[in-house]
Image (cartoon, rainbow over the protein chains, first blue to last red):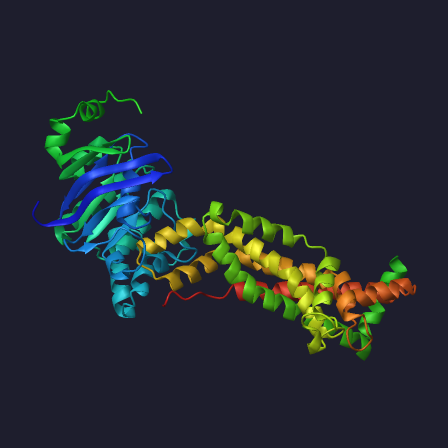
Length: 245
Length: 231
């Protein structure tokens, strides 16, 4: 595949004798939106955590940006800083909304003026400018997730990893965050990898889909091809709602 | 009881130099012991709290056991180390405030380590992963986790201070309760109670409470300070 930003080869994650993830090969194209779908326990979040180097794979490798091979958690902060992750349940720090969003920029030693510019712009985008001085821990679930998004977006990452980011949100917040995902993908060319249970969300957002079942990547490709005309029976069962999980 | 309490209040209002010396020595000994315990215990507890639980199971159990170390046993260990024939015998620490600090340090450190590790474990994993994904370096992650767990860590330091300022066995054993040299509030309370000077003993008890209160207020103020995100 041309222009691939992530290439995963022979990746495995095991706990003792139990293999929870096995991916023979998966390529993610630069500027694409890859939806990782599948039932619970399929290894979707584990894959995302390995890509973000929060977990070490038992075998295999990931090639980042066509040249950087790294599968362990050691070193290379510059690689880490090219991607970021938004978790299903956001962890906000015990400080103001502003300081939470500014955290990654301060860690990168951005100038104060630039930090302020980016944070204020992000606050306007997520509609929380009036709450900038409020303690982040006092926010509602939807507001907290919007702050977590803003905190990731100000970093202008090349890859954004989203682990069921809208799973616990109301439709208004889901709509706002999906619009935001589309915006950064289209305007900035950010590659998005999103784990979701929601097939409709995958259809709304994704250009590509990867289907996981029982720790294995069964198939992946163009979104319409995988969701409308799947090759594997398990994928068909899942997209047609016959798989109970 | 009320009469003794009133006499104690009167004694407090006429604080003599001998009593002031005892109070100051108590603050010096327990304050130094807790400061040293915090310097070692907070980083050690943070490290312990950030490890996978299964990996440090044995070490955690050891720390928890030492949290309940009886003061006299702590005093005995230090005594054996600093007595003339002991490993540190040549330094002449026995019956000095340094010996008392060493004994109280031994008692306070496991408490600071144990309680810090619990505070960090309860916050650490999610914060660690979030900050890694935000591209923070290890030093900043560590400082941020300590900051986020500060209430628990502060509780650990307060508990450590509470333990050592109130103990009598260890300081008696290694300090010897020598007037003007190693006599602290708890050992004086024991002595004065034995002599039947209940009002004086009670006055010291009140001062002990006030010292503890002031210590807590200071730590609370420190806790209200800010943390920097700058690397």
